[in-house]
Image 1: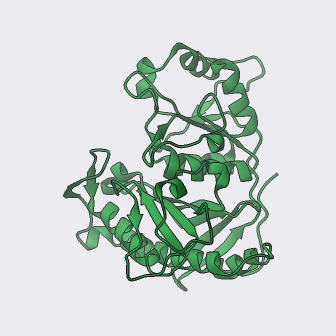
Image 2: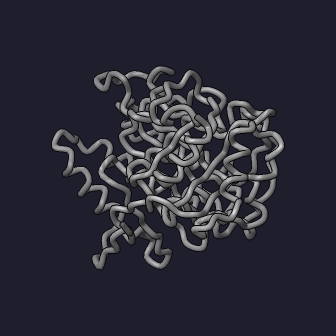
Image 3: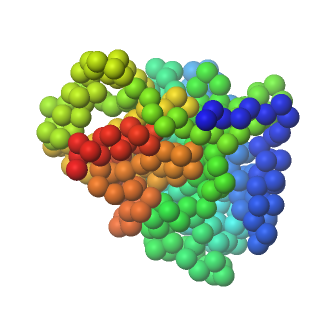
Length: 337
């Protein structure tokens, strides 16, 4: 079923307020969180559009926890989100790709009952060549929502099944904001002339199957035999004309997953001989993306179990990821199992 378009002009702020009405126990705290987060995204969107004019392209002299060079735009996105979210009194802790440990809320600000995990700018290697980028995010409730102290590592290390909201922003030919609070998936498109995200697709449903796949085949020689056989299978012509599948690969995970959400198919980032646990991060990449895809009717797995059921052991834990249309993922699992 295709997503429903809406003839109404509904801003993301109004939609967030309407979503609050679906939770009778809501106090408004989470609504304020999303308002602040979308404000940060507007600032990032502005700088991305002007990046080449404001000397914000290129590398900084820093590396992140993963040993990767930090790009200027990466650093800007990280700082904007942190500064927009650290003082509202609704978060107790944050965690993200660019920070080695937990990101505490400054002492001078009150602490709340929510946890934010995020990747400030997915697709960093594409920044300087003007290819699609994205921001990925997820919100949890802390384990004891009555506490008003600093959040703990245990508050962060919750399985994706415990997310109360998750989504991503795609900075492409237009800027789109896709998110879910557990009541379906909605897409908002940014109108820079009025500075608003407007609801353009409501209740998105991923197609059950499509003959498109997304994977970096440059690593084929490093994959295990089962996964190689699956790739060989979907590239082999069939009498019913459903194969070979078409390869679509951007190299920005959030962009590839977004394409799968809209058109169907499967995105894959397996482990290999060099990285047996994969390269994508469970907490702030795989979990939020999997939450969205599952809410849209798709599936996500690490090849053995549902991504959202994995109990994390570290903030920067990596995982293989196979995500997309239900029938595509089930077809893959027949080969892996």
